[in-house]
Length: 147
Image (cartoon, rainbow, N blue to C red; front, side, top):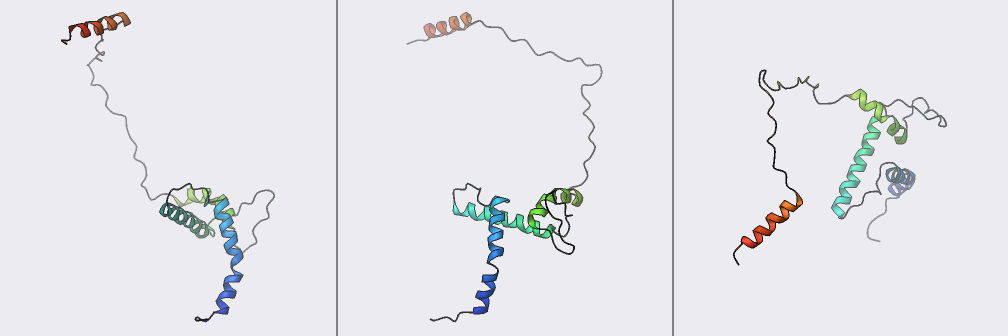
């Protein structure tokens, strides 16, 4: 009525609907989009943003990950990117190749310990109480207290 409809845009969106459906299924099944048990709408939005960031990482890592299909899967054709599910399967190997921004660990020597010539002091012994001694002390405390 008031606004013109862009038919080309609608047609492009219609053609991309399968991509949307596949993304939502992948995000729910493999990335845990529907598993979050959050109490607020803001937390749900943050969780969805984390899932989308994970999906973006998988898409960005696709050219770097070697395709290693399972025995029943076909190999990815030459020149084609592996699917996000295949990238997810090989992501562990990629993480090892990328390294870490942290520096190398320093070797740590153990502490000096006790100086030579000094003996280890044993802990002071505490007095041993029996149940009857504890009950006797409690009854004395009750009778000694002024009313």
